[in-house]
Amino acid sequence: MKITINQAGSHVGETVTLGAWILNKRSSGKIAFLQLRDGTGFMQAVVVKENVAEELFKTAKGITQETSLYVTGIIKEDERSDFGYEMEVTGLEVIHAAVDYPITPKAHGPEFLLDHRHLWLRSKRQHAVMKIRNEVIRATYEFFNNEGFTKIDPPILTGSAPEGTSELFHTKYFDEDAFLSQSGQLYMEAAAMAHGKVFSFGPTFRAEKSKTRRHLIEFWMIEPEMAFFEHEDSLRVQENYVSFVVQSVLKNCALDLKILGRDTEKLEKVAAPFPRITYTEAIKLLKEWGFDDIEWGDDFGAPHETAIANHYDLPVFIVNYPTKIKPFYMQPNPEEEGTVKCADLIAPEGYGEIIGGSERINDLELLETRINEHGLDPAAYTYYTDLRKYGSVPHSGFGLGLERTVAWLSGVEHVRETSPFPRLLNRLYP
Image (cartoon, rainbow, N blue to C red):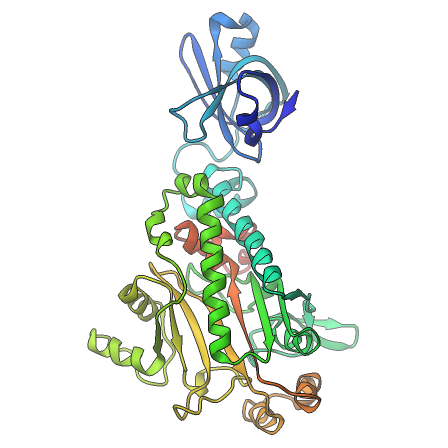
């Protein structure tokens, strides 16, 4: 019977066959220990010399890293293993013998590993990160489906810039200018006017050289938009969503978190509601803590965000940023002149902003004024202003960066580690 490693617990005492690769091995004169991986998990297979044919034991001792094979044996419980099971081998069939696999068990630098990203994905830690990434995606769909959202897919090729910047990847759409999407938000607002509550999940692009280890040229975003939702309504959705995802990862990725050495006590504390602080209050606190490199009207850098998040030791909303440092579409905040009704959700432990969101301007005249103030071409935003002409309503939305969120949940240092193939794009900017 062929099974996968994650099915081993249901076959204790049975003789089964696994298709697997050799992650690592060690051997003595009488026993060979093979570390197997098959994509569903990792398990040790033990080859005892006195219990198998001489040729089989010789094969086991000489097998190389990343060789593919079929392994047959008896599944046994193993309390010493985090996985809980191992296999006592009775048969081996080599499919392909790997030679000189470049990522050996010794330590390698990040540049080497990123250049071999297509192979690094096979490692135990990278496998764990990708499993957590997958769980975040699965939990995202579950949360928004349960909350009555409709999944809508915005275009990847766009004719305008949601953030109103020039840092876009330019291409030609036949005889027209087009850009790789910086965000699906503007299109999702149109979808919200048809479906009420919607969300998208897709790639976004930033045509700027990555200046820190936390930034990517390509990353994935979850972007909900909600009609008849004001700013406070949106904040409640955001904190409930993040809390749901964290709890799902804790429940379904316990072994992966253990492989990564993640301190789960920090994640177990994450539950809505989250603390909130205004931008103005945050500037005041930073000044009190000795930060003399920031003034009201400046955007926060990583050290500022880290200090604020560490103060609460939880995800924290920074709300009501200055109008001049935010995009054109954000609703003015009537309670503090010169600010808008927006929020960034800052993750603790130095991982920075994982969500940016706001209430959107719903007044046509004000929106047209802002488009002109930002030097944008009104003709490129006709479809967007149409939303304010025909049944405009208060509406809000936000975007969660998947890779940054996965980095926080996994406890890994680099955002690039959480994206499957970032080096293929970031190689353009060494």
